[in-house]
Image 1 (tube, rainbow, N blue to C red):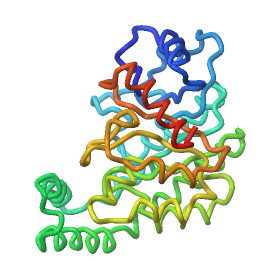
Image 2 (cartoon, rainbow, N blue to C red):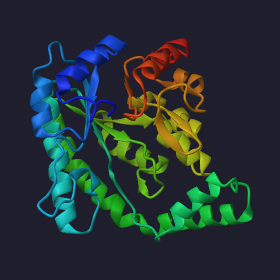
Image 3 (spheres, rainbow, N blue to C red):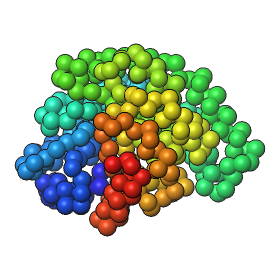
Length: 293
């Protein structure tokens, strides 16, 4: 994520990442087929994970694959979204990555409610009755609508798990940033129980903290319930509701997360390109200090 747009050739990104102190990279959804070819030329490339959909590409109508929802009832959206996820498994095999990080889908909710909730939080209204009423309205709306989307997600996962299992790749189901996105904690438990060791939990620290700040599932609830199922994590910091900062640039309690991460789980710093090399280096030192790496 950090290197996209910074380098004309991604082999140079791999070299820089190693110089800063990283041992692996995650190949993300912005990486095109051409960029994959560049990565293949990087000496000593080690890939922790591939973030679906990868390679990324634009459809004939201009839509980018990352923006497509696998749980959409529109076949013109659902079909290419699922195909993109299936192709990601093939990419993982080609690039020697053991895990595909997956966004399951979303539950369409009443327009405008979640952005309004976020604006209220940013304006210091989290403790107001209006904020709490709006949050509860969102909770009720999602609960009423989610049934068919859980069914679609389950159907998609059956296909993806079958392909991944045949290829020796695990699927990591990621906790999400927006409330309308799936899965919430109960849905995550449902999917993990259904597919056993073929899938694992991918804990995104910024996403989980973001939704906790909005009054939804507490961050620690994810970790306490699912620590044993974590196969990887996206690590970044969060300031108010904006995430993907280098560790130490926000207000997230990374030391509190550390004890819940299994020793063998992948640690991926998913950082915005606005972070400097110096901030990445300082972030790595912080992660060592708090025991995450």
